[in-house]
Amino acid sequence: MKTAIEKPKGYRRLIPSVTALVEFEAVARLGSFTLAAHELGVTQAAVSRQVRFLEETLGQRLFRRLHRAIELTEEGEALYRVVAESMQKIASVFDRLARGPVQQELVLAATSAFSHFRLLPRLASLKAAHPDLQLRLSTQMFTADLRHKEIDVAVRFGNGTWPDGTAMLLFDEEVFPVCSPAWLAARSEPDTLEALASAVLVESDSTTEGWMGWEAWFNAVGFRPMRLNFALRCSLYTDAIQAARYGQGVALGWGRLVHDLLASGELVRLPVASFKPPESYFVVVPHGRTITPAIDGPINWLREGADA
Image (tube, rainbow, N blue to C red):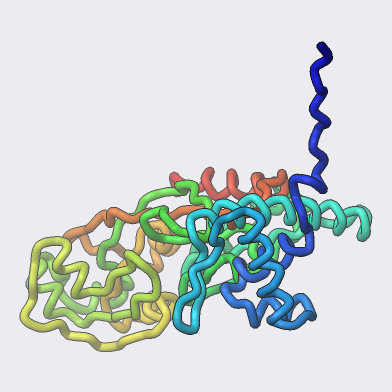
């Protein structure tokens, strides 16, 4: 008796519509049927039909339709990660073949403080290690959703768990008071937490998870002052540190960021107390982004700076 030989299933039989996958990826990445339709140059109704076709084919809901919003289901998130990565690989090959041999561009996102104090002073060593790399810095004030940006790598401070990318630990952090040598020479050193709370302080706004201001720092080191003497409040941490450099008062020094200023003597550390946050710095690669040599090299470069 002859046994029927099962024919292998081709991609066309397993994947009923590439168009539906393309439109699903756009909706998942942008979080909106309207924005996806605008990007793809089709109507919103057409996008909705393609996504509904996928859901009917799979027998699974891919999105939760909320009031004026949508979010991926668990099944939708699993499909999005695979589709996004596959499309990124295809797009990268098409782009490389179409443009021919060119310099590799890396889009690196970080806060203005990390870029100003940590990245820019060390760029020469990155270029020396990777001379063909063309870097584009994307400076952010707040943590942005990587699914909405053309970003290859992001540096973030937090707990390492984000829904839009894969995080790899860079280094931890320590927070302590800093001031200029001139400011310290003109007055007695605040050698207790009580004296520090009464000193002239420079504050900066919290712009990311885990980032702390003076009140949170005092609480973390076990001291609750009745009031704090703020001489200046800044929206950006870079401005707060610059104010401290110019003798305007005492700022909170994030060790990884003010390392070079301490080494050069432009700032001095007040040995009153310090706090090591539970959060750390991470490099985050967006879901769907392949870690190519152009990405892997700078990631390793960032990690090599852990001791400085």
